[in-house]
Length: 344
Ligand code: PA5
Image (cartoon, rainbow, N blue to C red; front, side, top):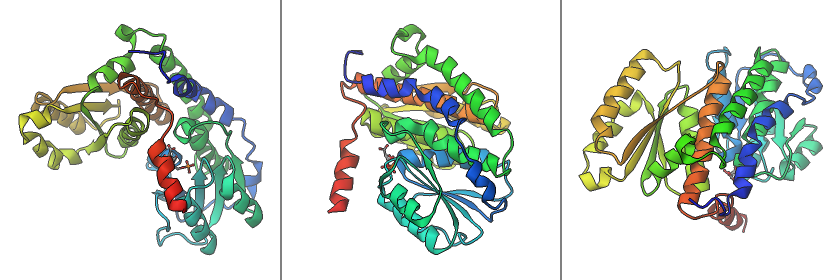
């Protein structure tokens, strides 16, 4: 595997992820004291690398907030959004058309709005509309700024007294990621580097990532996106228990097709006991026919640390997979081209 290839930038970004969490703790959110403390729903509007933090927030809030947190990856917002709602418009570049459209929709519905961005039109429009902006440091790829894009939203909900203990969990996340980083860095040889071993197993196959509904689901989605964008490979994800009711049947396909599928199961200590049993039986039934089947375990105490620890292994695995394919993990030409053509 040639580390001398062009991954320096992506590895450089990945290495700084834990510190994004600690830095975010210094955000000045005093302005939020003026905001209401009750909402009928909280919506994170964003796409791709800017939306994934919303999914983590949604997962985190599921058992902690009495109101729903929704992630809106569309031009229009759902009907529940109105003057009693909080909408976070998150766009790293500040120029993503779906997010800008959702921002305008939120404004028209008189929702409480906050923008999270490095600049672009979103920052300009927010300044004009008197909408608070949480500034994110520039110079990253959006998907490499997951800490900067997630932490402000969670800290805002803590500042609004909607959530408690977020700062502590963010501190723990940074610590757990630092520990995990020490085992994932390019300097760590393959025998001791879980991500390198996973990349070697995924190379030449179609990765399928399985998580558990409502928890590690978000990490599975992140793995899929990171394999797409870093390794420039198709990848798919699904969740237990739902996949046991349809996807497993697909493994009865002709052998040479199934032999091209590489499975990764994301495991967490809070997986429901019946899901744990399902994972074992499913792995036994379908795993024998696939190219490979691997398990990745979360680390840490709090849910945030556990989810980001799984995601971090996926970040590194997808970057090592790019190296396996001899390609640069950093640029995303297809996305850039599509955005340019949509702007014409
Ligand atoms: O990873 C990426 O580059 C994309 O998924 C972007 O995050 C996505 O296109 C949205 O752009 P932005 O994050 O600038 O709003």
